[in-house]
Length: 238
Ligand code: G3P
Ligand code: MG
Image 1 (spheres, rainbow, N blue to C red):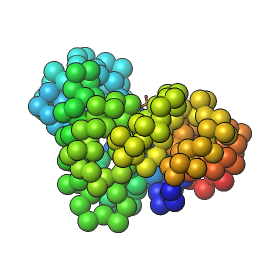
Image 2 (cartoon, helix red, strand yellow):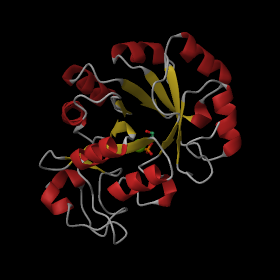
Image 3 (tube, protein in one colour):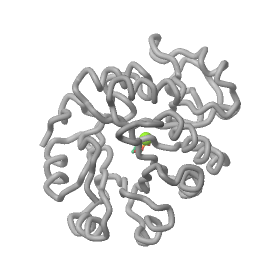
């Protein structure tokens, strides 16, 4: 496929240069010229989609507890590095649209919430990007979430997210109507990249923090790199 989205994308909002999965991180990436961002979306206990990576708030905030057991009102009281709050997906989407930043929305379900998270995030994404020229790409490690997203908002592009590219990737790409394969860059070979391209799909690699690796992957025709090191692999990196 042709890749209409940015080629260098900031991981979790602003990579390692700002608190992950926050509005401040998205602003930081945009201020450095990044035109694309990846972030993780999970459901709070009251089904509000929020930006967070882990199933608990323990690592990233000053609070404790499981995201799926708290309402958004409860989650929003916690502080992230004394300056940020856990944002709603809605506020992050609005900010992306204001800043003209494209989003790779990773559906990150808590265990047991795969179907409802896929469905809720896809429906929310449809509403948040209504009328947008460039739609977000929804991706997930959970094939249950991907299937739910495909059923809820089939028009939104999807990416199959995998640590290692599974042997039956062709079947999975077809099953979930994906446009791109999002893999850990360490698991990609040039031959595999060729096969994925020949099958008509794009390749997105995460998390690429080394300039040599980034050059090699772009040389293989990888369409998109997600990076934590916005300072090393800038938006114009080629
Ligand atoms: O979507 C790419 C990457 O974010 C997947 O890994 O654990 O950082 O969400 P993780
Ligand atoms: Mg992610």
